[in-house]
Length: 96
Image: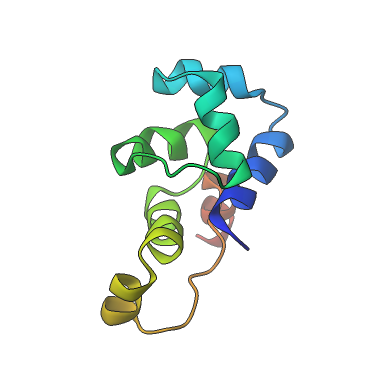
């Protein structure tokens, strides 16, 4: 699943609007909309806070972003297989 679809799907699952995400990240709602349409890349330094807001594992979201935005680098480090979809903090707790 493309990175922008992961973002949109998770935001909608949590019933958050783009303005909520934007406020948490100190950006505009329009920027969030562009990310979710796949028309703009996000700044990678926003990933940890975005993961917190969306309730996703930081590592999983970072791997998904690296795979989507820098596939050659991802392949060189981790191989060519796509990373699993980011897990929520709740899913990780249930596994323990």
